[in-house]
Length: 266
Length: 266
Image 1 (cartoon, rainbow over the protein chains, first blue to last red):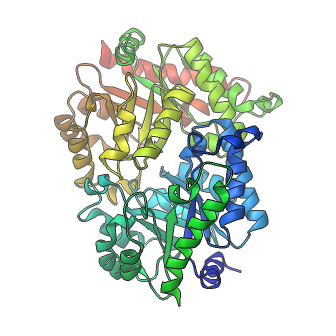
Image 2: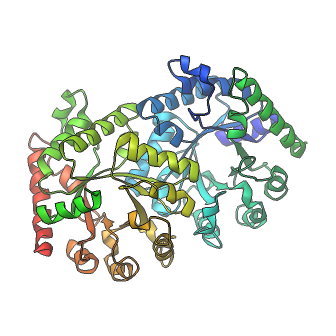
Image 3: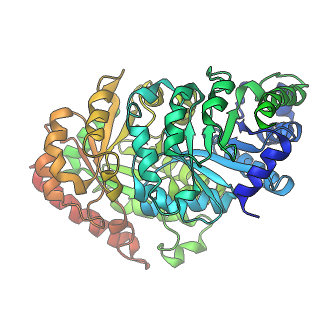
């Protein structure tokens, strides 16, 4: 079954379009986990086991793994293997924000889609078409282009027009149907215009919670007939508690978000 | 001694502003190296040993290591350790093209500047000021911002105005004196204007050789009083031969480039 159809099915089944950001910060993780050989994987596994009834996607941000050197890279591989084996219907995103010339882009695509086995990878558009198309060549895989991000720096270059140009032009590229886009939850007022450019594309929306974005606003302007949204939450779920009950508290937070999302799906 | 002064001193001493791109492609490397436990490190070490009299900088592109998974990450760490131990005056660049929001950018900066120990890292500007400033906080380290790249996709978003805006605005950021910029050798005609915006900054110039850029053109329009250029060559040096004599042939190629550069330094 095509991965995008699986994603949409999961959304309908779980009444959720929650993506959990797997950003294991060793300074915030429960201390007792460090008795394990691989605390990062132990943390991720417990979070996945507790939250998967409420989530349709998981998104490790590579920075949190790379900062740990070789051992972080190992933990990431174990995490994606665990997801693919135990939850093959769940959509997995490598939040890598890569972007390089053709030959090199092909290597990054191979790394994330094949060596690791992610369903999707985030890519920066600055270097243009030939830096993105190698990712789009992969059948049944998705490329999530940075569009309008949630941080204050979005004002520097993306606004007022560049993000729209990126969205418009990229829709002309080969296999544009494999593109999704990052739009920050703090940018809800731009979603009406974005939906005119991208009526069908899935949008990955970070910035709910800690960064101050509103789920209601995002849904009001961003939903389409396939739902078309993946709302990411990381810190509010992962660090709801830093004690023995962290996974239970994470599930509670994920469940709350699912319930809020469920309203828009009924 | 400040790393930038060391770089300029190396340039004067070696009469070279050559940066060797350490992009080990296992499909092009000499077959006999695979008898080694770590063929990638063996390749890099041989290339460094042979070419360092002609080069002032080395630049591993992360894609070539990540594609090998955990073992590639190991080879990269061994390579940077080898450079820092044996050639502490040589300038080292992690060609990573990262770019993420503040917290995450801080982690990437920590990874490349501290965990690995590179002198510089390439960063994509799409996400704006707060995605770049965490890198600029590191004393005696340099951030090399993508400006006008060498690939055809540079026409899509960077031209005609975005790259100039990126250069102008980033010069207003805190610790802008730690910024350098990527400008493709295929963009020599833009260098006159770029030098008006960035009279002092070092420019990292890929695209000589395989991609068709001209060293003469780049020097004519790009040199400043501190030289201000690092010309990168990868494939033409690394794969000058794929036999037992690969390191010798690599040295010959590097030496040829150094000789061409020496003309501009006398």
